[in-house]
Image (cartoon, rainbow, N blue to C red; front, side, top):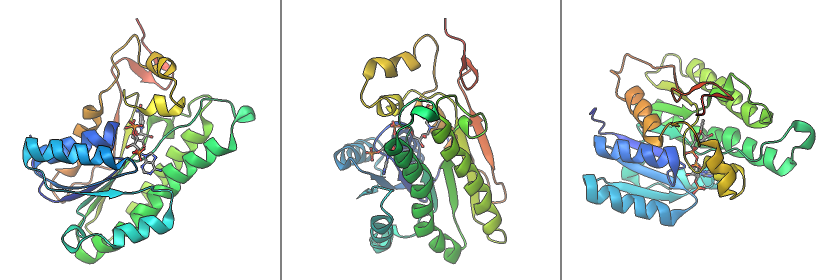
Length: 255
Ligand SMILES: NC(=O)c1ccc[n+]([C@@H]2O[C@H](COP(=O)([O-])OP(=O)(O)OC[C@H]3O[C@@H](n4cnc5c(N)ncnc54)[C@H](OP(=O)(O)O)[C@@H]3O)[C@@H](O)[C@H]2O)c1
């Protein structure tokens, strides 16, 4: 397994892919800043990683949609936690599955505020330090819907397309610095994503993952760790990781 000894800030570390990244980087030897709204889960994860790998972590309650809180909380990090080597912009969600003509404003706003503006706020807070130190890596968690628009999910797809554009823009804006920028595009991963999308409808969420083997959160964490542990002269621009049973969005080999 690859080692990683720097400081990693993970947004949305309370569940799914974010928690799996925490486990992968904890095992690899990183120090972790775990961010999310459900602080009790961050505390439990911190305890698990401390016991399993002796991982040193700092937990922050962070709603990425609140620009003021994001800047304040990240500015107020304890001195020895300020030098973030790797930012994993993972916090994100989909809400609803409906055609635009039936879409809900509150769902659209939550997705845009979290998946697009939230990433911008966190990145804006962390990046100046990386530029100043001449060291750093930003890894964004995108989605295959960034390039293959999912039916009844135009707005979610648009947030991930925007994230892809922002990722490319970051790479251009950081030209001349050694800071690396990566986007990882997952296909279907079994997490709490669908329970959140369907506002707690566990059965509808379970149906999304029935009849085939979806990705596990650890599969995406593995791709993130891979990108983060290449030599400094290697930038993995993007990685797309799908279940073998998924050919594209909506084309799943269900038995
Ligand atoms: N699962 C999939 O099939 C799939 C496929 C492609 C891409 N993705 C992307 O993968 C990322 C992680 O999703 P997941 O599948 O791991 O879903 P998940 O299990 O629901 O986890 C989502 C995480 O995002 C956090 N989050 C949501 N809104 C937030 C906010 N306003 N502020 C801070 N944190 C927030 C949640 O933490 P709190 O609620 O505790 O704050 C949670 O830790 C997302 O960007 C998603 O779009 C997922």
